[in-house]
Image 1 (tube, one colour):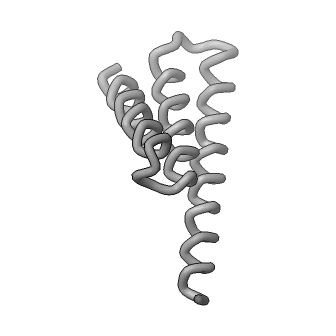
Image 2: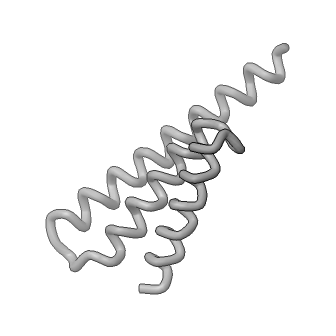
Image 3: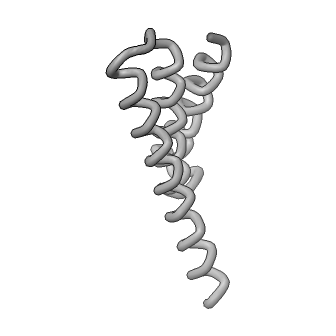
Length: 77
C-alpha cells in the first residue's frame, strides 16, 4: 500500500514539474502513468485495477519513447 502512495506522490511531483516548465512534456506523461499505476495499487482487485495498471504502463512506455526521440534529435543537432 505504501508503494501506491509513493507512486502517486512522485506522479504529482512530476506533473507539477512538467506543468511549470521545469522538465519536458515526456516527463509529464511518465508522471501521469506512474500516478495511474499508484492509484491502481490502492484499488481492490477487479476491473478497474487491471485497466488502470495497463494504461499507466502504456503511458510510461509512451513517455520513454518521447524522451528517447528528444534525445536523438538533440544529439543530431
